[in-house]
Length: 387
Image (cartoon, rainbow, N blue to C red; front, side, top):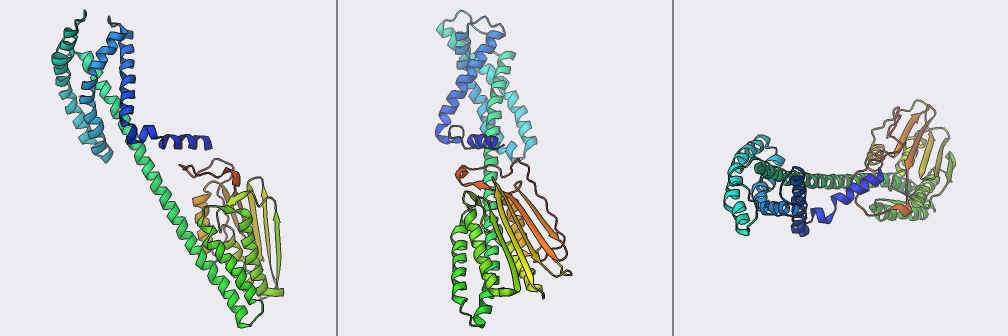
């Protein structure tokens, strides 16, 4: 699948095919190929003339091919067919086909045959209307029309894909902008609580928050960040919350596997951790707990977080943070993730499996599609999760 996408991208961005700089060379190459094909065709059909003579005859007909075919290719195709004026397009084809009978007969009578007579060829074709000549002319006009239609349609598709890519980029930026203030609001509330108590740990917490801010302002502007940096920021956040809750919470933090050689979209896991504190531990009267497990195996990330909760607590999956994560997963990893959300009564569990990008495989080649062909599909079980 990846190789097929690369081949499509190479075609869509091929300079010789689409750049105006090579327009003349494209036409010369096309007509050279075209007259050679027809010269061979007439030999196969039993023409008494040699290949060279048939090639010369077809070369003489190139001007009438252009005169008859280019108005349709450069006029009717873009201004009628591609604008949805189908009936007008086919009506013009019928009218122009009738005009073509006179163009063909006039060209044969006043230009094509007189040139051959002036040269002194032994075999001189007849003047006037000839069915085989008219068929050759109309067929030769159809080829540039098909090529022109395909080229314009491809350019439209490329423009549409570029617009879609810009739309996705803008939507991702909007989702990030929603994540940042939402996260900062909760974190600043934590530090504010410590400042009211005049805790000596407040400056250290502010320093940790500045590290988080630096990450969000600088690193999160990129499409991907190193997994180890994302995990490190989550650990900073966990330390901030540990200071807030003190001995009233048990925290388990476990990281396994290679965190250095993989990339991940920024802020893809942190909102789940933030949510576990805000709507799990903060609403409990008894001693609470949180368990975080992050592991990698080859290019697969397995992120699992569990948090205690009140048994009768209700949850909602439509909150800002969780909704943002689900949207970003669909945009960035449409066929490369699984997400489970499970309410187990006394605790809530979130598990995210994600196909990571190795650091060495990053490139700047434009990608046509974001869908991947692998064994990971979007699956989510979401019994009432509230944010």
